[in-house]
Image (tube, rainbow, N blue to C red):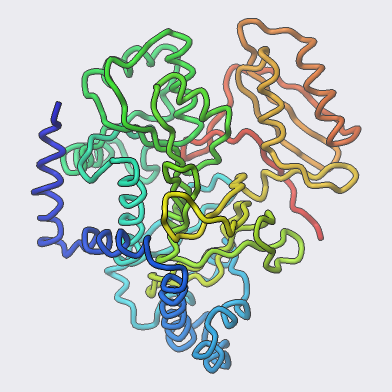
Length: 453
């Protein structure tokens, strides 16, 4: 059945936004749809020219980067080589030196203020400009188009409500999203056994074409519907998981419950849309919008193809508050493999969450939090969990018991952790709820102390 609201938004509302507000998303989307099939050489040259222009702008007109004017000859000759001469920019430095990162002639009244949810500590506050925002939104719609999801299609968003809004502002925000973008909301904070029947009735009544939300919230939604034996009465096109690591066990459960593909979106509030999964299963970078580097965790030097390291991004469109070599804090690897989908966009793989998801064993080995997630799947006694490395020798294990809880399984889980982490102290805390972060995400693993090199 045709969604009339989707047609109205796609054919009337969206074009009107272009005319009234000067919105360029549609124009950028057309450009990105073309460039995804460029040859590798053409794509490289596009990046090279955009990077050269950005770096020259930064050293001339952005106070934080003026000390690097000496790089101008190298920028003109080899912008990629010049890029590696710039320092890594951390989240703490962005907060501390925000004013020095802003273009000297920027019209600050036209900048878009933003901030991260602070799931790994202090929120990062920053500005973006309209081209940055619109290019990122165009990259999202390009990725969704690979799955036959288009502008105006009805979306169920499983999300934390905007933190900065009061109740009245939040109501207005939700109404605008509903009527201008065809988005309906479920709060990630309110998913529970009592609310799931109400939400499932709303979903079956509204019939959104796709879901979009945090991996942990979508997984919880699937778990609750499975436990209550609730099924959708129509066919979903897809479910988009974003803003968190999508674990295999989450994908399997969500696809089983909703009988549709899970689409992985790799994005961040402070970086925009970084990559999108195509139907062939590869994660393609938004290469026209950014340069992505992978750095060794200890040395902060670039690593080779297939090697895991820290994700560093340089947005090629943000001239108002450029962040060169911004340390996102995620862990991933770049791949040189071609994709059967035919797109030349580079592939990123092994997206394994944040740097502080990495634990350090007593013998100094790095152990990613994915290990604990995959391990927990073997124990039916564990309904939900969180593993926190407090110190090098102390781990807190929070567990929500399942209905068929068996204490011996927990001891087995602890024994397996000891095998990889060494004889650390493990404290088990049984709880009824794993508290989400301020933005509504659930972190399955985290380390609470810095890695010392």
